[in-house]
Length: 284
Image (tube, rainbow, N blue to C red; front, side, top):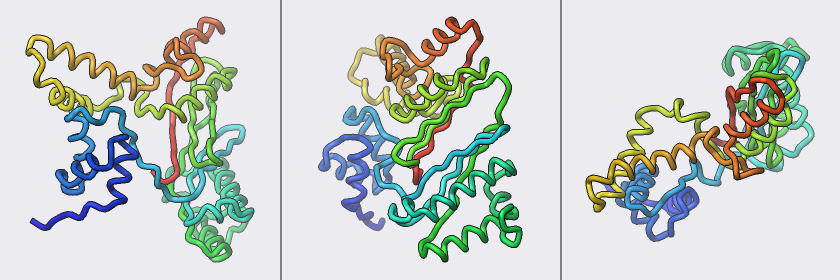
């Protein structure tokens, strides 16, 4: 079987995601024949890596733009080659026009959006508008993804944008239209803590089984009669790390996000519920 080359870049990415030393990262990648996820799993099983980031620090350039009108909140990610172009006024105007168009037309998906006519110049489709902008700026531009959130009565939507639109989070709370600040606070928390799920009910069974397998590998030398209890504790720890409602709120670590919402619900006399969240990072 052909030897897989483990590059310095792969080792650097594994170190950034796990916090493990360069030597151990190289060994893990060689053993896993360059498979990043397998190397991470093996490091965790060995008890060397604990908290693992979902992605390394390297990402494409670009920005995530948000917009809103009376009926809709929209997000769109636009990728470019260099940060220099991101700061260009023409690029900024282009992204603003895109998000306004999305709010106005509420396309079903990205493919439909690219095909539809540009309202400010009906001779062009959105994709042709993109191509014209590419020619103007001399750099490749790609519209990567979009998301639409219809505004609902008695719902609050809060958005937090970080690093000039390189990281954007959104939170929707039901039960009141007056909880935008609470939603923004939780959106800021999400930017920092990067939850993967809203609650443990959302975690796929295959992910739970994978976590159990890793926990089992870490406690093989423990007495059999206590292994189940240890695994249960490790799963709880994983839920507290991965699930938004279980995480301790960054502005008040004495309470969880779930307790924060319940506390505000009691104060306001309204039945508030955190119904969904989104966390986008450029290049993911």
